[in-house]
Length: 87
Image (cartoon, rainbow, N blue to C red; front, side, top):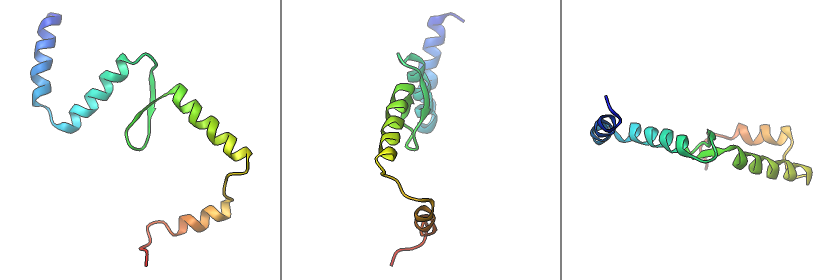
């Protein structure tokens, strides 16, 4: 099959696939063409590059150095409330 035939067939297939698979295909193709490779995704499905993750982690480390964190005990108290209905 030639490249032109493959492209034509892909266009037909794309018109038939469901939205969920279409989004997955889009992410795969866009990450393949990205100048900086995508190395992961955040919880919302947004692709992340190494430089983006490095910047995020650098900010988090600086915040911790400034004392902007909670103790394990505070975390345990907060997490114990997760999923409980609010009054």
